[in-house]
Length: 602
Image (cartoon, rainbow, N blue to C red):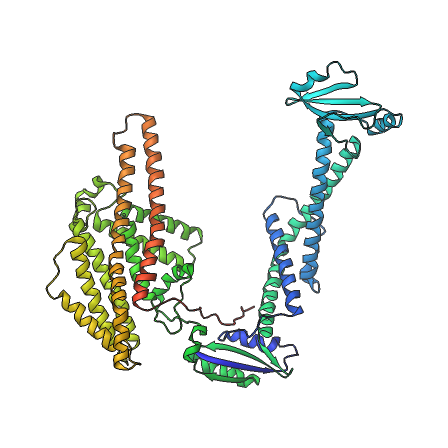
């Protein structure tokens, strides 16, 4: 990447034209000098929010069976029609919301009259004017006996264990210690008339909104244009203006695209300075990964975890994808589960119209990995009976078999995978500094890693280590001590490397052992599947009820097991790449992704 300072004249004028040229070029990753603030930005943001709300309103009514209104204007033919359409939608929706609130209140009043009967509010006012006050209460049925001998308390009705009671008194402040029921504000006739009127108005509003759905594309186009405008304004005011003469932006461009942007700059009268980023600026330089097409499948995983190598770090995409795929096969390790994952991916792909998305390619790859490892280990829904079918048994690698395999060799194989994985990390780091002596130090670390592999086999599995194992540590330590710090004086560099060596060796030992998790998690998946099989059909199926129960146990049990296996892939499959391997390759994923200022084509 190259660092670019870009200058444009007349920053107080409308800069849309120049910035649109820059945005359509889509090459400059801009690092703002300051937060973008301006009244024009606030206005555009407000309009974007309104447009998004308008589109969401139409989404609610799209596809409904509401009759269409006949007097809706064609806003595409009007000047600033998108604004008029938006205002019509928002006003109609606001009116509909108010009508719904009013209808809700009227419905409550209607229910009151249905409950208490045809009460005349005018008659009640006449009675109150003569000094007799009526108050309505709801009293639990069990308490009604307390009022049987009171002439000024009458029971008007009963519903759901609650009695409707009327208190008749000449004292305006007289009351009962129960829930008092308020009288409606309008008469029963007015309630019915208002309900009919409000429902009619609401229906008209809904018809209008349903009709306006046909013009939703006008709002979508307006939203895209406002988003473009917001992007331009954000870039404009993220730069620094000097004396109202020049506005400057700082950013980064790919090295092979420098000529593209300098040619455009000269054509449009822009000033520019292009230079190499300094080492102290590497943390700010975005990372642009250029990988073969097949490695892009790992991008969804890295995006999900937020993993972006730093600008000065090696690209681990290829190794990450290969080993993540391999780890997924081992961690799930059941050909039946792999077939289900494949079928679910195929179904989702079909429902999407076979859209070309890298996510589908990733899931297909992982499903095949699970199926292949399941075939090699003879694992099919955790059922040993299926594994013993002659044709399938011939496809097994007997030492790796889930049923009757050599567990000691399987664990040794997992440690071997770890040693190979960590070795690749050190070799990649050495290749990065091929023009220095650091690759020699990395060869020393490779030697130590394989010494640790033999040591782990001896301590954990009891497998005798070769006689040359100590020399792997000795030779590796010498190379690390001599060549790890080429920029320092020899003695100081050796002392520094030797001081860190014991802790690094201990970490390396734990890293190699960490790969045993592949065996442990894969084994637990098989054991859980087998246990659910035994729970379901271990004692046979003798009745319809036992058959139904067996089916439920099998379906729910294996669904749970597949879910846990998928979670294990995210936890352990990613961890071994992100921590163990990346640590030995000195990759901290401290970068930010290259995201150039780019405007979508209209």
